[in-house]
Length: 190
Ligand SMILES: O=P(O)(O)OP(=O)(O)OP(=O)(O)OC[C@H]1O[C@@H](n2cnc3c(O)ncnc32)[C@H](O)[C@@H]1O
Ligand SMILES: [Mg+2]
Image (spheres, rainbow, N blue to C red):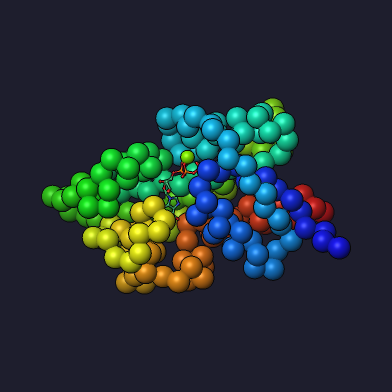
């Protein structure tokens, strides 16, 4: 009999779901169900964006849920595109995001993952953040997931896209945020 804790992850992104399941599968009794709900994303800080999305998801579901927002932040642009990376990526592509940084003294960037957990409608979401530093580089590796080919992580010399998934999942912004969420969920079981 499985005594796994079940959680609903509200996301429309199949790659996120895949990584979250792979990371949580490492010895943890948390099962993830997913739902793709169309939730407008507000403008603001990464925290404001994450909180508003999770609140709305819990209202629509009528129960507890998690949501996740990923930002890609350029040091030269004071953290932008940040939570708006999805639209920047769609409009500019990998090459355009690189060109955006031409003429700036640094191509340093960080990937920021924010998980939000709501215990249910009306319950203020809790946030769990994970960050991985890196550099924006011309694309290398298979273009499977978002901006993976242009993000060279920390001192690995590899873009996320060049890493086997187990390697990315050990150092990623998502892994680091999930580690905190997992620790919090364990305290609820006690
Ligand atoms: O339904 P949700 O969960 O919101 O899924 P989404 O695809 O809209 O995701 P976000 O709003 O968080 O936007 C983040 C953007 O960054 C991309 N992205 C997220 N995590 C990534 C990762 O680990 N590597 C590369 N790209 C990523 C993703 O495809 C989006 O274009
Ligand atoms: Mg989204």
